Amino acid sequence: MIADRLKLAEMQRCVYVGLSEGYVKKLDPTDGTVLWTSNDFGSYTYGISCGFDKGVYVGLYTNGYVKKLDPSNGTVLWTSPALGQYSRGIKCDLVGNIYVGTGVTEYIYKLDSSDGSIIWSSESLGAEGTYQGIAVYKDIYVYATGYDGKVRQINCNDGTINWTSLAYPAYMYLACSKSGDVYGASNDGKVRSFDPSNGTVLWTVSMPTSANEGLACDKYGYIYAGGDDGKVRKLDPSDGSVIWTSNDFGSYAYGISCGFDKVVYVGTNNGYVQKLDSSDGSVIWTSPNLGYRAFGVSSEYYAGWGL
Image 1 (tube, rainbow, N blue to C red):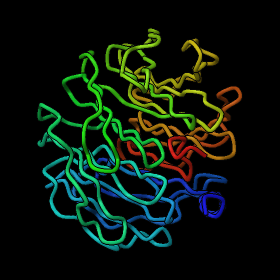
Image 2 (image 1 turned 45 degrees about the vertical axis):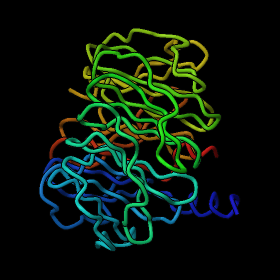
Image 3 (image 1 turned 180 degrees about the vertical axis):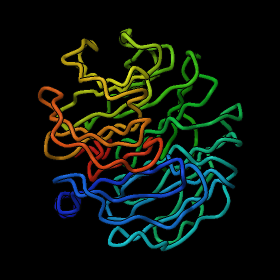
Image 4 (image 1 turned 30 degrees about the vertical axis):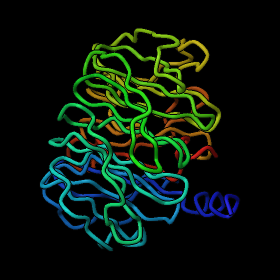
């Protein structure tokens, strides 16, 4: 079953981009051309994630709706109940459920991919805030962090909280590796490795940027962090040391996503997406200008699926 899903995800080979104008665009992964543009959903489609069912899930600013899009043409298949506001943190698990963090509630929501209904809302996270930092490991744990700078490990089965970390400088982006390692990149320019058993910090490194604006892992365990200096950095998972630093793509290397085929996608403040070679950070292609703030980027691969 897992092998079939892996083949499905590999066949998908695609890149989706959410923009501040409220559109989602699908890009051809071979050259970055636009294959389709969705309807205008209002403002800020930064929360975006691909699922094993080939669905494309996008979170909206207004009322926190999540929409499932048809990957063939961008039409809306369903719209979730209103979840609050600013559904920016979205990740799918290994079996097709969706986890959403919003901007005005103190909960994480688990949605059914077939119709968008709410399966559970988590235990209270203790504080309202923009829970844009979401990572999922298989269908076992979901990790969430908000403006209070704390990381929580939440049970995917029932929404109970297993542990809550110390508070770190708000805010933080999270990523999981295929082996279950957990990383956070925060707006103080630091990247941290967390022990998944209890949330303690295993290592901390400082990036030469004032804020980190995106984080992802590839299937080999390497970490990619985007900075507000417009650069992407590849990090060694053993100690956080920098392996390479990309060119400067302008301000905010924001949306970071990895592909199956040893590539990294990065969205930037000026509306472009770059496809990078993960071996050295060189640019394979640059998309056309897509609008403004290509902050939401998702590809066919997510390391937290454990594949």
